[in-house]
Image (cartoon, rainbow, N blue to C red; front, top):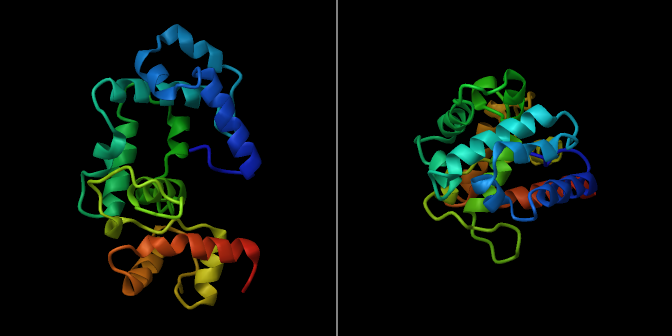
Length: 204
């Protein structure tokens, strides 16, 4: 959720957050007490503020005391649009969920491209021998993944004739992913790294 803005800033903010968790985020999330959350009062990243951090800690504390992995939250529906919508709803089902924090978890129901969620799923699901993706989750197929669509991927995909839709929304994600499935139905999102790289380097 912090992967937005300049890469250097994202890395520094992530390190700051981990430091506040004693560089052991899972242990902190599971075992911390409510008073321990006060140390995050001055942590913020762009529009991600103290209120948002508190709720993320609240949800993760609740979830990881009952579950081993967040993978279970992404195995609930047959298609990714429904899955990501359900994930959003589950994440904010606790009674004290702030309305302002909902903007930090995207949902296809609001026509978002859900770039960061799709990127996270790519990292966790895809098997990659080049050190790009982790492949830690084994119960979700790479064939189910959707392309993380940003301005770079969108621009290159349009120049290559893979994307026609003008709006950058969930429908565009579905259109581009469908085209990539024609190239590799079992692993369509493997092309994301190439599309993004070409866009950043400006080689087209």
